[in-house]
Image (cartoon, rainbow, N blue to C red; front, side, top):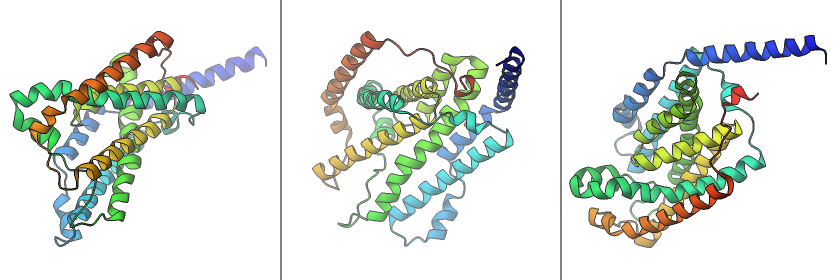
Amino acid sequence: MSGEQRMTESEEAQDKEHKHSGAVERVRVRYFVVAWLVLIIWLPGAKSVVIAMGYDTPWYWLDIGLIYYLQGLVLVGLALTLLVWRFPVSEMLGSRPGLPAMKFGLPLTAFLFFTAVPALYLVFFPLSYVAPYFVYVWVIDLPGTIYFDNGVFPFLPNLLNIVSLCVIAPILEEVAFRGVILHRWVHKFGMWKAIVGSSLLFGIVHPDVLGAFLFGVGMCVLYLRFQSLYVPIICHGLYNLVVWLVELGYFYHDGPYAEHTLSGFREDWPLAVVFGVVALMWAIVYLRRKGFPTGLRLPSLSR
């Protein structure tokens, strides 16, 4: 290859990167964040969805209808964001995941699962004595992900709920928080500020703020290390599936009508300690063997 050809290829790569940066810089994350929070706090059109489905419809179908309606609105918002600001979707998605990516991603996802319980108790156990009603409403009295009614386990609603939880939600959240927001903030604030900021925002829109924040950091590391959004999407989906299976286990062990109480939450603190010890030992062994992940880059900067 001649020097002139190499020069041309280099100029083309720089031109592509310049166009990519310009497209990313057009994104206004503040509007994106406000819209996301509005949808969580106030779901416009929810009453119309309930009326259209009929008040005599079983409650789990109404729940599924509202979940899919919310995810549909998020999907429309994401699509408009990518189209209006001409976001470089192919660069955002990166490469297809390979075996090394999954061999790294699956253990990390398992580690994050073990950190979730102690993270939850670290925040909400002391709060349960200061603001018990808040903890009960925010953490304990959440809608379950297992549908059961009048002795019936409806197959299709539960299947649709799994698809929503383990397929649709991971795709939407990873595209939004790692694909769009992280990309924009890396260009604006730098790598680590973007990782912390986008993960903090991810934590805020979830009940378990600290656990979701740590999970967000882990998904950022996966995305940036392997330059592939497919990796955190797959790991996110598997994480949610494990959560659903754990809830299913409790469902069969405790019975479908078991009542979750504040005192029960407090009494389960030894489980958080066990999970915390496992997570801490796991982290120490990993950091001693491999150190903290380095060489984190956006997909567009490595292609």
